[in-house]
Image 1 (tube, rainbow, N blue to C red):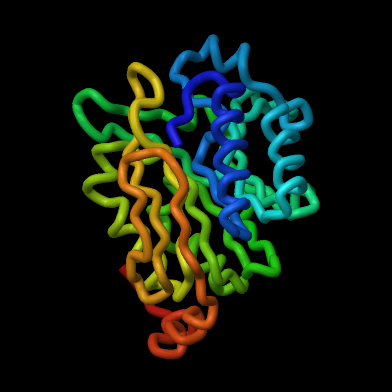
Image 2 (spheres, helix red, strand yellow):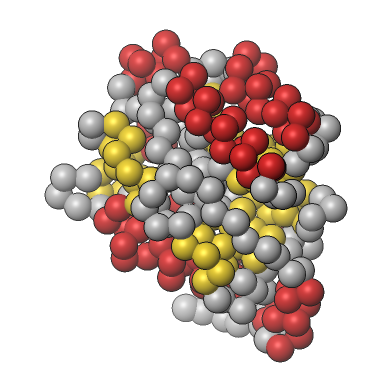
Length: 265
């Protein structure tokens, strides 16, 4: 999807997609990072964003998941914190078919980078980092929750896989510059290293006048195969998962069991 700065508009689009996917037989629906609001205007963020308990999109999509009977990965929401830290939260939610929040995860790694002469990010100025890795067991499979820039830190994914994750979630709003260079390679690497499915729902297109995202939502098999690439358009992409492939990949390359201690440098 292409989330803009108005949560109500974004919610309408999301609700429509979720209901359509459920009508077509989907059991599990995934949305991108910051599905509720993308804006670079600090004043607008202050006016628009709310805490988790007051967020109408979260409540509405809990109801939608219950109405249509699907598992929902609400990729992430930008939320105000109810702690002393004035910075925002970038929080992912896993919602069950009864509309309950089964797990949530706060993005650990902040995107502080200058990717070109005209494109720079200082996410840590606006967002406080999380400090806890999250795995959640569901009837669909055991999920490891991550968000976007986490993708560049393989130790997190290895920890999730060792904790039982079979499916790694990577909702994202990747930069077009880094997306072209690294997106597919990183997703495939995380799948190959862990023997997990990797599911990455992504923002796409021109989200604001001065912010664009790469798109190319992908599903990757435990053997590193690209099962689908949604391209740069908005809409729904469907994929079937065979979880027996997790065990098969790990049996062929048991790297999760083969860590070695070493010294230096």
